[in-house]
Length: 446
Image (cartoon, rainbow, N blue to C red; front, side, top):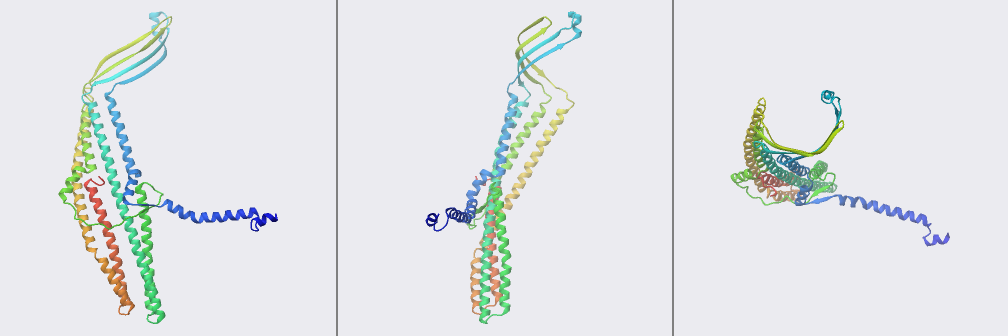
């Protein structure tokens, strides 16, 4: 036992191992939160965010499923033009006492049947072909729905990304403003200790510090809110994300209204989708009108039949084939009612197309005006921040040398804060307006 103590520095083997394990655990626990936070935090550029959204956004995934549904609808409608094969079989027993007059007794009848039947439409007055054409057009609507989801998601993600950058910039400005007011408070306390400042100066500086704290808290919460919004749009809820980038950009004049409007009329996915649906509703009129028209079908069957009656019985192959005509020439005007409904639906869609064209024209005009307004504001504020920074430096130096009063310093600080905040918001508004203009033209991301 004494040798064991000497070998382990005077500690028993068991106790030394426990202490080492505890120290190791403490080190791991200290480093674990930082490692976990670093692993969970995803810092994304705008391009990376858009790529993640294309893979995970719920609206895009929903549009993909709509495409699968439309594909299934096309297969369903196409099946009406293909042969229908049915395999059927039966085994039955029957007894009919009315047959005693012919056979002297009512014998039980045993029947076994196996049939393969065929049904093939030959002529349906255009009903089947119209349904197939409508389903083919439906495939095109699925493509436009997917484009619409992609463009809408890209617009929302880009705006959310810019909102997060703006929140971070506003938070930086708020923190700088707080730190600056703290420095002024420290300077006021030093002057008061030196006897060159009054209680009023100290109290005013301390109040300014406290008044600057809420904006820091508010912008910090704004960052969290915008991070959650971006995570939601990316389709990765529960995973922390952050944005890296800049709101700086070159301001360019917006394109001409007529140019953007023509592009939008040719490219907007919802407008192209509506035009495809006009084709579908036109085919629905044809389908409704064919309900009371003649129809030809080829029908046939082949199989094996067995029949046993009393002591008589036999079995063998059986088949039949024929062309069948059906003509529901009067159905109580049900077909006329369906045709009227289909034509009304088609006319409604045409009105919706005109309404959408008018709405797109208004959206394009507003988008161009927003780009022009945001660009002019950015240009107007470009030099204001530098002027406000210079003004604050002059006010602080003057206050330090006693030639400026506290109110002038506060005014300079307020002017700088407003200039920085306004410029950041203007840059965000310009980027969002350009993104919205691209979306309005129907060419965002293409």
